[in-house]
Image (tube, rainbow over all chains, first blue to last red; front, side, top):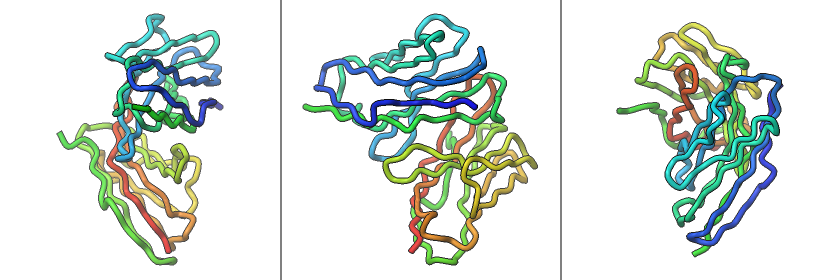
Length: 117
Length: 112
């Protein structure tokens, strides 16, 4: 069964600096998708970025980028020029392209990011 | 664009009561899900559906039931509420392929 591990329960960053959140996953499949979701105190789940495993190029969305290392099964999220509004829980998620677990996303336990002014 | 609509936003139940959490999506998504999120924790899958008329259990189905009579709607039924069901409940839907999950705004349920 696939698993997703976020080894950092909490992280802190100074405003305007860069922070990297770690995510590793375990799978025997070769084709899948990875996502990062943000959950601010409002409780909403917001998609931050997605990566398709067959694409070698790392995904980027404005200040958010990923470092996707397929062989190492690693999918870290880098947040540049951190802003106070980036403070939130961040969840890493995996899904098989074939919808292995009937199309279910498998989530990590989350990393709580604090941003210091 | 409504996306995924969950109702109610908040609810307090007494032990043993029942209720239905409503979820509707207007994106014609086949896949729909119910998750629960306990304080400080990640998301645990309760039930999911891959299309109208098809549902299956997730990681934590006990104490819950679902139905999927239409593509749009995926209600979650709590029978005989227990304090252990105090949580925030999220409904979500997705299309196929690399389509991400679209979440509702959540329902905060307290059972006392």
